[in-house]
Amino acid sequence: MAWNTVCPDGTKTVKANNPIIQDNIDYIKTTMVKDHYWDESANLDGRHRQVSYQASTADNALGSDVAGNHYIRKVSATATRQELFFRNSSTIYQVTPSLLTGTKSVSSSYVNLVAVPENVYGEIFMYTTVLGKLSVCTGFFRSNGTAVEAWAVTALIQGNGSGVSALRFGNGSEASALNIQVQTKDASTGLTWNYIVTYRGL
Image (cartoon, rainbow, N blue to C red):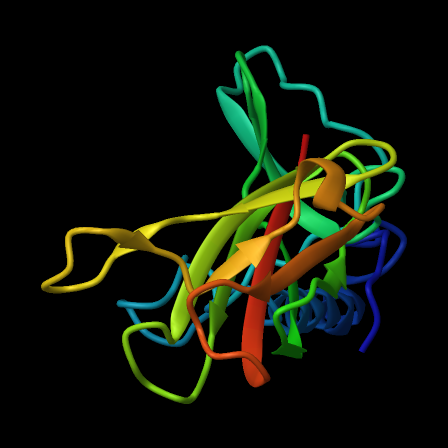
């Protein structure tokens, strides 16, 4: 099966053009079903099975009659993951955050949690499998060209009016280059923590 650029071919008879036209019909259907529901059911036809993007090297301009568009590009020159962006007449926004996951044993002294790129901002979610009042910690961070600073979110324990935080993240003089720093605060030391770090370009 191949695509025929000349279709129908005016130099051929109607009979000779039939296989050329059929090849093009088959090609369209085979190609379209990769991303679309095609000739399957009234409830599905015309809808997307998935959306595949080719990477852009820059932010795509809006057409004169276009209100917005989605496209894939690198977050930045230093944050090289390909992510989904949205552009309208007023802003460009990174829709899908970049993601870092893993585990880390956390003690009472600061350790490197994970390195992040330059000039990003994001959120930190950490949890242990040891359930309890201090088994989850959230935080946020931002980086510039040389360092990342992070802060934990204080929470209230049920029945206790004082704020607590299972972990502490490094900022100010406690920051260390582009590595998010973490240590225990109110949680037990030496536990293994799962982390999910998401970030977007500034």
